[in-house]
Each structure stands twice: as structure tokens, then as C-alpha cells.
Amino acid sequence: MKNDPFGNYLKQLEKVQKILQLEKSLYQRLQKPDRVLKAKLKVKMDNGKVKTFQAFRSQFNDVLGPYKGGIRFHPNVSESEVKALSAWMTFKCSVSGIPLGGGKGGVIVDSHSMSEREVEKLSRSYIKAFYKNLGPTKDVPAPDVYTTPQIMSYMLDEYEKLVGYHAPGMITGKPLCLGGSKGRSYSTAKGAYFVLKNLEKELKGDKDWSCQTGEKASPCPQKTVVIEGFGNAGGQLAEMLYVDGYKVVAVSDSKGAVTNEKGLDIKKLAEHKKKTGAVSGFTGGQNMDKEEIFFLPVNILIPAALENSIGVEMVKKIKAKIILEVANGPVTPEADELLEKAGVMVVPDILANAGGVVVSYFEQVQNAMNYYWEEKEVMEKLEKLMNVATKNVVSAQKENKVSMRTAAYLVAVKRVAEAVKSRGIR
Ligand code: NAD
Image: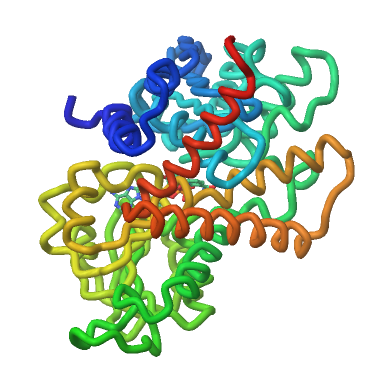
């Protein structure tokens, strides 16, 4: 299968297994989800016709805590993708040190072509299909690509109607009025930002962080960045980096890309995108082919769109020395190997984009207490967790002399393995 995210996950796991030498039974357990639930959702469309949509919920592993992971509404959703995303969630929660397992959901749908009413019916129908397997202590969904806080509200409402009591902690990424957490809306970007800042400190003087002015490492007055995907995570991170003095020289979205070698004014670009629905056509830059932005001469390349956007054929042309994976699985395993050989540091998704699930966890904690923190407190807690997670990964990397991805898996798989062992025979 050409696009097989779960196959990619298995290759990553195999690599880690060579170093960790897990017991056979544990290795086998990590090769498949605990269960994959499937349903055909029927929705009466506005024109009176009933349409059927394929839906999935993959519950990968819950030894550390309830399954946790978003629900994606996208035409390219597949069983392999949902399974892979649920596996990555397991290790994302583990590497971040939070007491949650890994799950993921998806519906094969082009929700952008549907009315709000139809999207609401689809969201409620998803919960009707799976609610018996969901709940604050079982499996906790959240938003993902093309699902929103509003969709989380429909889902919470449907769940509470079905079970007959309030259970705000059954889903995260809710609006504040229904028990959402302050700071959740930009937490993925903020987490990635904290990881990057930490790495800069950890790797100060390392040539990967130098400007591309020659062999000798030199301090970088203004780091240059390219971002694929100017959406929720990528757009917010672009703004944080811009405000912090980084030069964001190109960004793309599904419709095109825009560049300015002197640096894009991200605040103005965000306004332009809001008005026109696309980054292209921005007067503060020039349009460019979105496939070409990967090859610009910058320090940091940030894929923040969908899986598999960096394949082997692209590796030779990539000039960035750091790739920060804000999207899930944006680098294919084959490309990953070549990038490692070429000395490019790939900061893996399970660390780089963990900020979202960490604040989702905080949201659940607040729901359980029925007491809510101020935004500053949420961000301080996020920063602390991301700092510890990054430090642990960097230590594992140095200790084992492996890539940052393998190091992150080493940390994450070890924690899961320890929990499995402590639980005894199941
Ligand atoms: P989003 O829908 O808000 O943004 C995705 C962006 O990617 C959009 O701007 C879209 O136009 C763009 N895009 C789609 N196809 C593209 C293409 N071929 N080339 C260039 N751009 C393209 O989604 P998001 O929430 O920002 O998520 C983006 C990625 O980050 C996903 O992989 C998601 O799983 C991951 N992620 C998001 C969160 C979160 O909290 N938002 C958390 C963890 C991981």
C-alpha cells in the first residue's frame, strides 16, 4: 500500500525494538491496537436524502490511562491512518509524562461541502455509534483536522443526553463555556514553540543551529523558517516565531504558497488568510509553488499540514538542518533515514506537537475538579512539562547516540513497558 501510515509506524517501532529488545509479548502488543471500532454513520442531508459515512475509533493502548486522541473529518481518512495516529498518541502521551493512553477517530467525509446542520448531525451520529466505548475514564476524544470546538460541543451534548448525566471530561477541546481550558486553542503551537526554545538552549553552539554561512558554527542573529500548512497549529506557531524575531520566509496552505526572503509579516498574512481563505495573493510577498517551499535555504522547516509530505525524493533538495514535525507523521520512514544520514535533525511529532494533548489533559483535570485555572497557570504548567519531556529526549539521544525520533520512542516505549510490567499478566 503506497500511503500506509500504520506501516510507517511499524517500521519506527521495529527500529526502537532493535535497541530496546522488549519482551516478545509486549512487542507484539505494540504492533496492533487494542481494538478498532467501525460504524457506518447515516445522516439525513438537507436535501432529504440519507448519506452514509464510514467512521472509525482506534483504541491503541490504555496501560497509562484512558485512551486519548482526536477525531478527524477528512476525505482521506483510512483505517491505516486512524490506527497509526492512535499509536502515535500512545507514545505522545507517554513521552509527555501524562497519565493517558492513545486513541484516534476519523470519518471519511468532505465536511467542508456540508451545511452546519449536516455537520452537527454527523457529529451526533459519531457519538451514538461509539458512546459506550467513550467516557472520561475510558476514551476521551478531541478535535483534529477539520473538527472544531463547536463539533466537540455537539458531541458532548449528545454523549450527556445518552448517558443521562454531566460528563465534561469525556471530550476535550471544548469551548470555554462548556468546560474548555484557557490556552487550549493555541496549545499545540505553544508546545512546539517551547520544544524549539529548549532545543536551542540544549544545543547551543551545535552546528545545526548555526547560520548557513560556512562550515564554522556561528550564532544566528535571526533564524529563518518555512512552514507547510498555515492552519490552526502552523499559523499560530508562525505568529509566535514572528513575534519572537524569527524570519518566516515562506508558508503554504492547501491552495498555494507565499514567500518573502526578508520575512513575511505574519500578522498581516493571517488577516489576509482570514479575508480571502488562502495565503496566496498576499501583497507582502510573492506567490510560489507550494511544493517548492520545502527546498528554500532556511534553518528550520516546519511541516504542519498532513502525513507523508516529505518523501525520499525530496531529501536531497532540502537545505534546512532542523525539521520540526508539527503535523503527525509528515516525514516518511524512508525519508527519515536519509535525513538522519544527511545530518538533518528531525524533531519528532510525538514530542513537537504534544502541547495540544498536554493541555487537553489539563482540561480533563479541571473538569474533574470543576475548578478552572487562569491562562497564565495553564501555560506555566505546559512549559514545565514540555521542558522536562524535551530534556528527557535529548538525554536519551546523547546516551544512546540515536536520532531524536528514536530517542523519543525510547523514552515513551520504556514508560509504557514499565506500566505493562507493573500491571502483571492481563
Ligand atoms: P488545520 O486544518 O487547522 O490546518 C491544516 C493546514 O494545512 C491548513 O491550512 C490547510 O490548508 C493546510 N494544508 C492541507 N493540505 C496541504 C498541502 N497539500 N500543502 C500545504 N498545506 C496544506 O489543522 P491543524 O489542527 O493545524 O493540524 C495540522 C497538523 O497538525 C495535522 O497533522 C494534525 O494532526 C497535527 N496536529 C494538530 C494538533 C492541534 O491541536 N491542532 C495537535 C497535534 C497535531
